[in-house]
Length: 397
Image (cartoon, rainbow, N blue to C red; front, side, top):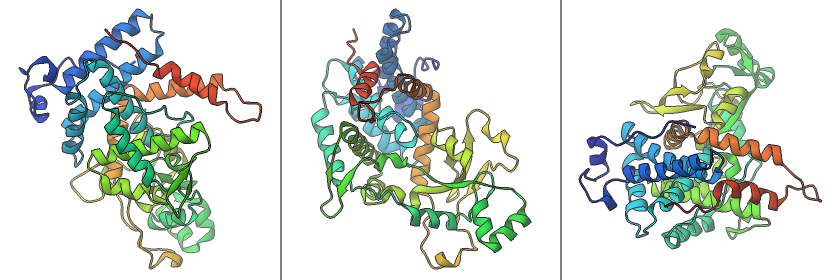
């Protein structure tokens, strides 16, 4: 498990949160409240001999919240002010006497509905946590749920446009898409001239495309028909993610993602080699913006970059000048800088907090205990029983 969070914040971070180190206990700082909650969960986890999965989930939830605050402070971006204010309000403006449980629930919300929105996983997201401010949160989630329109899962046109925009190349390895080189003679010629290799280049979603799946909607009315518990959970998770974007000052992006095919818009797509795509989806590759428009430094976990001969540590997104004639006059938006930045924040927080290992553990439990219902579909009761191991209510002294 990841290291315990630092014992306290420095004065500049307390100041950035609009708080005083000498303030009364109930409002000392969001971060110090998170530390207290983390320590309480660690105590229960240790008392169980390291077997209490709920307590472990609460440790990770509190760390996600603390690491978000830390990253917002250490790496200020367009998100910092609105996101910090939202988190502070969620924690300090709540009147509950059980602040630890509140922190676990708020942290779990960001863990399960923000970080997971950028990560591929076989496990369905847990239900949105309950906390004393739930009526207000429910109204916000319901609002975004009503705005969601089912995504057309056939995104072939968007895929082709994204490939044309990015020049049929992986932005990070410079590899050319092999099948396109076989179809387009001019592309094959450029691939030979640049000599950076060819491979299976895929179109990759920034916000995971699974966010929009399992939703069967009437696009004319905008109303959703949910046919199973899994679909209900997926819809609620999507609505929760959009509500978080809204709270972070990203309402325009949330609105676009809620539209039909919004998750397949070019602003949410980029081209990566298959192996890099998998690492990007697992939050092991991410981008952090520089001072130049559409320019990013590339960060990786596990020394991934060393396995590629032409790896780019710095990339600039632009429209490939030699477009295929079918898209010569088409509008080809670049990947949205705000989405890429938020993906990068979530990747960094996921590794700092231990959420990556936590997600992997849940996936392993699902894999090892998988059962099928008599009709061949995954048992709803099974999913509920596995998720209950990690999400049951925990009474903290």
